[in-house]
Length: 635
Image 1: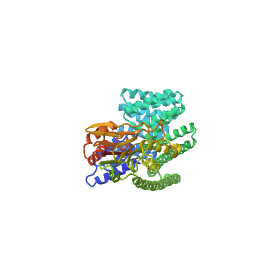
Image 2 (image 1 turned 30 degrees about the horizontal axis):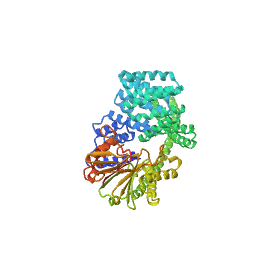
Image 3 (image 1 turned 90 degrees about the vertical axis):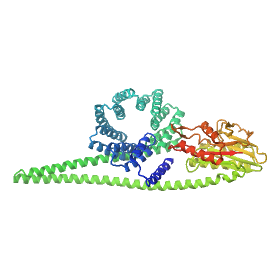
Image 4 (image 1 turned 45 degrees about the vertical axis):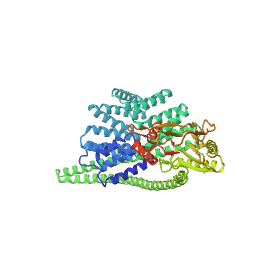
C-alpha cells in the first residue's frame, strides 16, 4: 500500500516539476539503475519516465538498458508475455546496430524467459549462442553468469552431469574475480543438490553461505531465493520453527518488493508447512494462492507460444510470396506451351498456398480473438481492482476520522499541562500508535502507546486498547497506572481470539496529582526520558508488553522525583527504528535521546519542528517503517 502512495506522490511531483523544467533523461536513467536491485516497482517507474523523456543524445544501448529493467519488472509480476516482447525489442536494436555484446546480453535475457516458461531446450540453445560470443570477447563476468544460467535448464531436464559441469565452471570463474553475488548463486545450486540427496545439514550450510554472500554483495532483494530454499529444507528436516522463521522472512521481503512470482512460490511452501503441522485450513488458503500464481504463469506461457506461432507464420508467408515472384520471372523465358503449363501449375500452387494462407489466417484470427478476450478480461479486472482500491482508500480515510475522534484533543491535555508538544506521524493513513488522556477525580492520566501492528490492523487494536484503558479508570475506578495495565492485560486475554492473543501494546501510562503535582507511571517495554541542563536520565520500565507474554508478573508503579522545570519525553519506538542517513542504517534509541538532549532547552513548538525536520532528513528517499508518536512535557 505504501509503495502505491510513493508512486502516486512521485507522479504528482514530476507533473508539477514539468511546469518549471523538463526532467533530464540522465537523472531518470540513474534513478532507475539505482533502484534496480532494491525496489523493482520504483526502478520500473523511473525507467518508464526516462523512456518518455528521450532526447537526441539518447543512445540505443541506453534504451536496451532500460528494457532490461522493464524485463526484470515484468518477470517479477509473472507478465512473461510483456517481458518477451521487451526482450525481442532489445535484440532487434542490438542486431540493427551490430553490437555483438548487447546481442549476447539480449539472448541471455530471452533464454531466462524461456526457462520461466518451461521451454528448457530453447533456453539452452540461446545460452550457448550467447556463450560463444562472450568467450570471444573475453567478457569474464558474463561468461561466468552464463555458465551458471545453463545449470537450471539442464537440472530441469534431469541432465545432472551437464548441470554439475557448468556449476563448477561458474563457481571457479566467480571465485577468481571475487564476485560475491555469483558465488551466492552457486551455493544455491550446491544447497539444492544436497537437499535432493537428503543431506539437509549440508544443504542448510550452503544456503547460509548463499545468504552471507548476497549480503556482502549488498543485494538484499536476492535473499528471497535462499529464504525459500532453507525453509523448504527445514520442512523436510521437520524443523518447523526454523521453517516458519525463514518463510516469514521470504514472504515479508517478497511483499515489500512486490515480487508476485516469489509470493506464489513461497505460498506453496507455506501450504506444505501448515499441512505438516496439521493446520489444514491455512494449508488450503496458501495452496489456493499458489495455484492462482501458477495459472498466471501458464497463461503467460500460452501467449509466448502464440507469439512464436505468429512469427513462424510470417516467415512462411514471406517465403511463399518469394516463390510466386520467382515463378513469374521464369515464365517470361519459356515457350508459349511452357508458359501455359507454368500458369496452370502456378495457379494450382497459388490455390494451395492461398488455402494454406486462409487456414493460417483463421488460426491467427482465433489467436487474436483469444488475445482480445484476455485483454478485455484484464480491463474488467483492472476496473474492478481500481474500484475496490478506491473503496478501500475511502474506508481507510473514514477509519482515520474515527481514530482521530478517539485521540485526545491537544487542547484537553493543555488544560492540565500547559507546556507540551505532540509529534504524531502514522506510517499509513491510520495508526497503531496512539496517545490518550483522561481526568478522574484529582488525577490527570496521559498514555503514549504502540499497539501491535500498524495501518488498519494496528488501528483496530489501538481502538480496543483505548476502550480498555478508559474502562479501567473511568468505570472500574482503578487509580494506579500499574493496576490499570494489569486490568487491560486481562481484558485483552479474555476478549481477543486465540489467534490474536499476542496482540496488545507497549507504552507508558503517566498519572499526575493535580493538587500536589506528584507524577508516577507504569511502563511496558518502553520508559520515559527526563532531561535537565543537558543531563539525560532514562527512567525504569517493565520489560514486558501489555498483553499475552511469557512473563506475566504484575506491573510496577514508578515515581518521578525532582521533576520540576525539567523536560519529560514519552515516545514509541517508531522514530528510533527508522532507517536512513548516509548509510541507510537504523537511527536507534541512543541517537534519538542525544538529539532530544541537544534541543530540550528550546521552546516546545521549535522542538516539535526540529524533530519533524530531523526525521524527514534522516529518512531521505526510504519509506517510513513504523508509526511515530512523541510527546514532550515541561512539568
